[in-house]
Length: 373
Image (cartoon, rainbow, N blue to C red; front, side):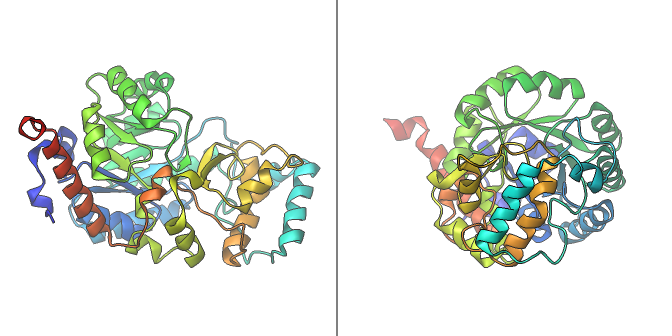
């Protein structure tokens, strides 16, 4: 298998040279060990810090730096517009309709779900301007190399990050979002197709990427959404992207699987690409996840329409935490993209990257004129 230093030059794109990485693989994960392993294997790990308190972000980014040394890594924050100003759970709860409360109470009763021992991941704090500003301050104080914005890219934050020497990126899911990303001044655009896990749009990756590349001009673009093979990396380069942004493939890495509930790991390993669904039941925004009893319940005719973020967060956050804490069969689930169909075994991050790059090298070889004669 290839080592980072033996990656073919055709696969080492300008963004690799700019960041000082061996492979055009950007790996997003919520797990510190996984992020560090991606960077140490020649890609660049991106830490998803949206649901972390500012003091946790400071400590966790410092720990990643310790693990990767001088190698580059990034951090991603979701910064949606029109969030509440303050981190006040009571203010949000006051506006949750009784219909939605009754629906949650019914789920708890029918599935016999014990209470959570603490707030869920989505209810640790309220997605708000107050928290966002504190999170941004923690990121800016760090020595992280890349600052990515998952939803929304505030120009003031992009400008500050660039002044501090950080590369900046925006994830977008539609050509109509290009102008706002470019106006914000980002250095890099991630074109994320609907196949992607978690928050995602409606346009397929193969259709989206060329449009974003054309619209971005000299600004480099990464392809995201459903990417799980080396052949797809080569396809992304053929469409004009300079690399791929990946997420789902790392969930079943050895490093990440060690920190997931065993039931979730089994679900991911057994899922096909047809077993994912887009639902608003998780956060109020469109999110792709593995289909489960949770998503099915919200599709029942009598189910209420999910609330907007952050109201849906508060409605379901503690319950989602209890479902995972108590391993409630049928309801436990994970966000995942359609590339989950490639996640058939638990392997170390370094092995995943080696095999992906080997496949990409072979795919490049099949495109040479001599191989097509």
